Image (cartoon, rainbow, N blue to C red; front, side, top):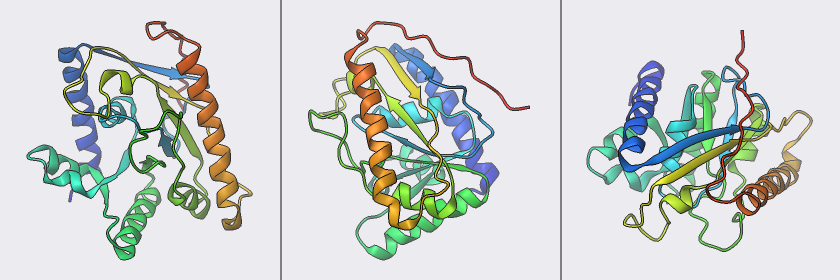
Length: 229
């Protein structure tokens, strides 16, 4: 496992690889900011999960130190598995002890001023609804560490590569929406469900707005990125 600097460099390399790969396969990456985003702030990023293309979308849209919570099963893939092991905090849901180890690793990243990224649905949403039910993990960690939640919406990954299989890849736009951060100050551990439901409703409303109203080819105008001094 790499140290902090080594892990950060892996994500920089992955972002560079993503730029090249997107160009080769004809995917146009787009970032939409509903409010100015501070890349120097620390967040728990959460996003909807419907496609194998969600992981490339993560490395393309993240421009700050980040660690992603990912499935342990992915490490068995040649070459990719080695990179995955180096850059991702692995979660093995086969036991309570192993899940707890992943949570400790996520908290350790936050203590080192590194943001974390979690898919709160856990697995692909294969339903006809905008979102599946959320797990508690991201919201429990947010309250325990007092780290704000930053919802993201992956609008087109399901159109670029359907969860049915890797042979349905199609070129086109892949847009990511950065929504307004959700502070957790004032929330207690007894209010995990309340926070989780609030984030769920915000993301569900956003997905309905962007997925229903605009046409698939419509260009959306992003708000300029605000950088910290």
